[in-house]
Length: 284
Image 1 (tube, rainbow, N blue to C red):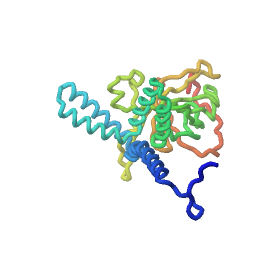
Image 2 (image 1 turned 45 degrees about the vertical axis):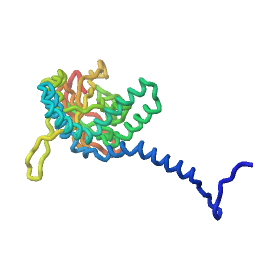
Image 3 (image 1 turned 90 degrees about the vertical axis):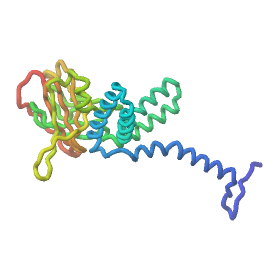
Image 4 (image 1 turned 180 degrees about the horizontal axis):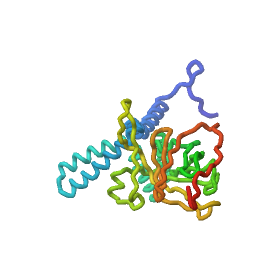
C-alpha cells in the first residue's frame, strides 16, 4: 500500500517539508524574475526614446573625450549618467540580452540561452518598431496611393505590396528594415555613412499656436526595392525607416531621394488600383 497524505476534515494537510519546499520554490522564482521585471518598469515612454537616445549618444562622445584626456573624475560622472539613461531604453537591454544569448550558445548552455530569447520576446512589447504589423497606405510619387502589408521575419520588418504596379507587383516586398539597432543623427555624423550623403529628412510637429518644432524620431536602416517595368532588374537600394508615431511611418529610398509616408488603415479597406502618373524606366 502507498502512503496517503494526512487529512483534516477531508482536506489535505501540508507538512512542514512541503511548506518549506513551496516557499523555497516561490522565493527562487521571485529572485529569478524580479530583476528583469524591475527593469521593465524603468523604461521611458516610447515617445521619449528618440530624444533619450540622442542624449545618450552625446554622453557617449563626452565620455570618450574625458577618457582620452584622462579626466577620470568627469568620466566617472558621465558613465553614471549614461548608465541611468540606458536603463530607460528597452533597446539597450535588448542589446545586452542578445550578447548574453550569443555567449550562452557558444558555451552550449542552451537552457540559459532560451531564457534570454524569451526575455527578448517580452521586450518587443516595449519597442514601437515591433508594433507595426498590419495594413498601411502610402502615396508613391509615381503611382499614387497603394496598400502594403507589414509583417515580420525575426527582427526584420517586411512591407509587401497589396496594391501592385507595373514596376513592383502585388505580393512583392517594397521595402524592408532591420529593427535591432535604432540609430540617430549623431551616429550618422560620426560614422560618415556614405549611404546618407546629401540626404536629410526633418520631422516637425506643430504646437497649438501653430509654431513648428523639429523633433527626433526613431530610425532604422533598411533597403527599398526598385525595378524596371515588368519587375525587370529588381534590386534593393539603401533606405531608412522612420517611426513618426503609432499610426504614421515613413520610408526613404536614399539614392532616389524618394520619401513615402504610410498611415495605418483598417483591414476592411478596399485595395486601390494602381495609377501611373509619371512614365519612368525604374521605379519603387
